[in-house]
Length: 426
Ligand code: S3P
Image (cartoon, rainbow, N blue to C red; front, top):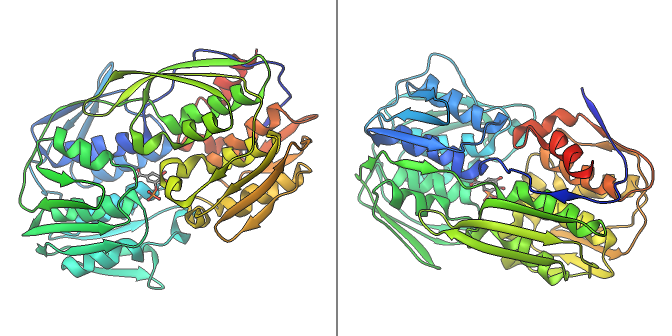
């Protein structure tokens, strides 16, 4: 297990190049695999999670080739996966497992999916339930977990009301619906990230979506396309937060996804009185542009439940910011954090308390009153990349040295995180 040592930083400045968006990278590979013809992907995220998707697709018969500046996916011209002789190992990646459940539900093959010690503790019934209603058969460990087996079948479209605002569940249903008989309508909590809806249109699929529903007709074909993956706003968030925390700091980052379903963190920073400037450089198929942040004298904020999906992965960072903000910060409606790569509400509370901070943890969020002094200490990452990175940022404003235990887990989404941190604080 590797350990990284973080020391307080006087300033953070620079133009870090941010790697490709994780959600869009998974989808580019999967949609490319389902397409007629080839898909050329540039700026694909090269990280542990995306490798898990690429590895599983390869086992299912998809050819993925790396060229100098891009990846080429040879489409199977439909849902034509071959049965894998081995178990499909999704590693740490919930997105890999849940999206593959959606595509494999309509395949006339038997597939077994598993994952690492974190992924096999995360709930999967929320995905298998709607897919079973469509006609697939699942066998889940203890009725809810991986390892899980899917026996695909001819599916029928459904009307389904989503109870959890999860893009992974929504996408699994849409991917099953594409190869089902009839029309599928998803209603309820559909306001999670909408990359699937936007990208499927880019791959030639007719999909209708508005604030209340997504409608998709079965039997449609995807057409291979060129896909430029915008840079990941959840990764850029670490440097926005660091710049906001350290006096005199400034960062500028280009080609960042400005998809409105992902910009919640930047909006919260603005409410905390941080100067954030954005400039859109592209709208289709995914909005992206330049983001700049300058140090601000932070103020406490309240994050309401309807904002949570747009900043779901950035909440550990909001907790770190809250300790340095004047006044009270409250996050509500974030109970989903308890079933991420770790129980992120407990992980945040345990580590902030170890650094000497006071936090009130609630079933669906937390309350933190700032400003509070943080002291460097040993940080338990819980094998969770976002916890390791959020507490590295906390270490920049703590007194003394902060040790990030099991720091290699950052490779799940941002392998160059520590290298970039050293460059920006040099
Ligand atoms: C993701 C959706 C989010 C997010 C995860 C990636 C996706 O989860 O936390 O990191 O690519 O669809 P949910 O929307 O399922 O909560």
